[in-house]
Image: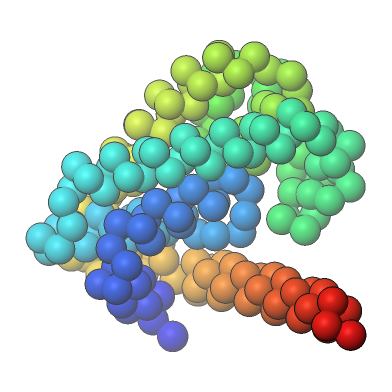
Length: 206
C-alpha cells in the first residue's frame, strides 16, 4: 500500500481535517504519524491543492490542542500512570528516562526543543504535566515550538515534495505501519464500545 497515495485520497475526501486530527492525536500521545501527514500536506500544497499558510495554521492549532490534552493527562494521572500504562503507546521506561534526562538538562525549554527530537515530541507534554510544570510557562514554549515545527515540516514537504524518493524516505514503511496500527486501534475501540452499547441495550430491554 502506498502511504502517499493513501494520504492524498484522505486529503481529497476530508481536506484540512486530516492534518488537524493527525497532528492533534499524535501530540496527545496516540500512535498516529502526524509529522508524516503534515509533510505530505506540504507536498499537497505545492501542487496548489492546499493553501500553504492554512496548512501551517491548522497544524499549529492541532499541535497546541493535542499537547494541552497530553499535559492535562500527565497532570491528572502523574508519573505512576505513565510508568504503568505508557507501554501501550510506546512510552517505555527507557524512553521515559530519556525524556527525564532531557528535562534535567534543558528545563522548561524542553517543550520547545523536544518538538524536533524523534521519540520525545509525542510524550514531552505528558511528562511536563506529570512534572508539575506551570501551565502558563508550558503554553508559551508549546505555542512557540508548535509554530516553528509546523512551518519547518510543512515547508520541507512543500519544497522537496517533487523529489518523490526523498519523500518516500520520510513516509515509507514505518509511517505506513504506524498509520495501520492507529487505524486498527481505532477500529478495536469502536467495536468494543459498540459491543458495550449493545449489551446495555439488551439488559434494558430484557
